[in-house]
Image (cartoon, rainbow, N blue to C red; front, side):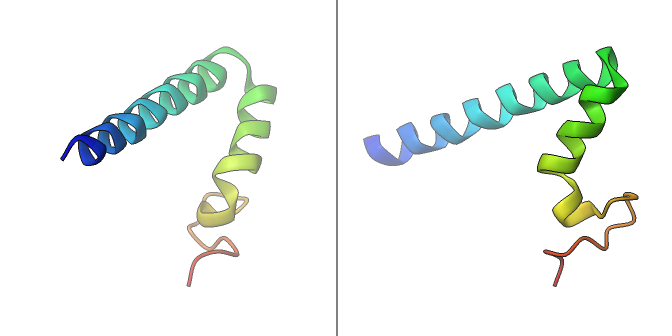
Length: 57
């Protein structure tokens, strides 16, 4: 159970930090936001945000 809880908290921490960093970059600087979207989001959401990225099956 200890390893499971540590894993859950680790994943939660990564998600929260990633979300905060992404939100901060998007709200602060459109150029940074575009780069973050291209790197982390476009592969699923598509370049135009249509949900037809190359990793969507």
